Picture 1 (cartoon, one colour):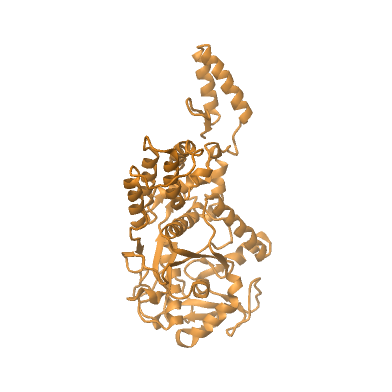
Picture 2 (cartoon, one colour):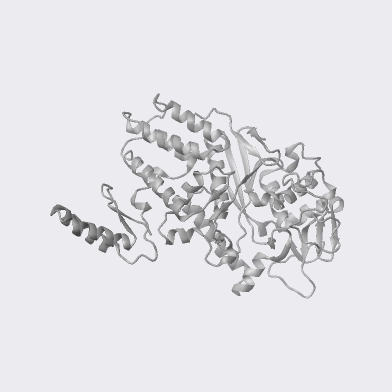
Length: 481
């Protein structure tokens, strides 16, 4: 089942490429992690569901996986295009808290979301401020040939490396339009390696450097931690599609400078063999933005009665490179689909897991393997899993083994999940579970007495309070606001 060659879309070459590891038997992956100045929204979390599926697939294919996810607690400005205030400093000022406390709180909130979405822990969470000395050393190593100093800091001259911006394919004579103009910059796209603390100011996070007291630029941390923890070149670098335009091209330029590499016709000169990007989660009301107040974070979904794994299912239903539109109706449909799968798997839980290589499952296991090997085509893989659950007249233990094999890649945790786990009480529900059960007993008595008027009235009354009565379901009811 795992012999199908794994092909992945490389954003740098714009081609599907067979995965051939830099180090035989290993897979080294770096994923751009969160800036911990606020809670992550569900669009942010799509990137980590995608990276988790990639990591699970590599493990399933037999590679010894080393996955690094960074935590950005310094250097990321309010405009990704190298302008504005440091996001961490700004939030600390707004909250009148220590920047270290801000980082700790939002890092733990991110980790809670990671756990809720059944995302596997990486080999290491690399924290930017743990690598300041290494960042300064990295910058010193490239400064003479590739950088110049201004009053505001040390800047990278993008004209000193070949093929700058190839990843984004967005280079024009005017340079990248989203990058802020800084007086004295040689090229519009030049970016800060080190930002000096302005005269008369003190930052909560600042360090001494050859270019004055200050803090590293956002792009520097990923180059440094990728090289230190995985070595150049490593296999795969992942991130959201928004990183493809500025952050990753700048990171690549730094990597080229550090390695003394040539142009990007050789992908490994970028620091990684393959660059992968998930597309956006689109939400039409504008609540994906953290500036909107009650933005769409995972806890909001839970507060409305949706299990976090319904969102994981929603992500799996779309290919990672396609836009995914969020709606409450779509999330509800994903939850319903997950419930049906869980109910089918529950019937297998008492069976001892057997060997999955049964002839009835061979074509479905091959379908699943081909889908995942085709650039992580999770929508087709999900269908293969559902078709495997529908196979009749086979040993339950064999079927369980097939489902466990597939779910090890999809990461829904099906064998450990119960139908009851998925029934979450919405925060604003006005009725207790005890009251629901009492009403269902009264409805059952009415039905036995053939008093269907009362039975229907109870069902309608419960429906008005967000309770969906489901005759024939072992649990009998569910929330549906």
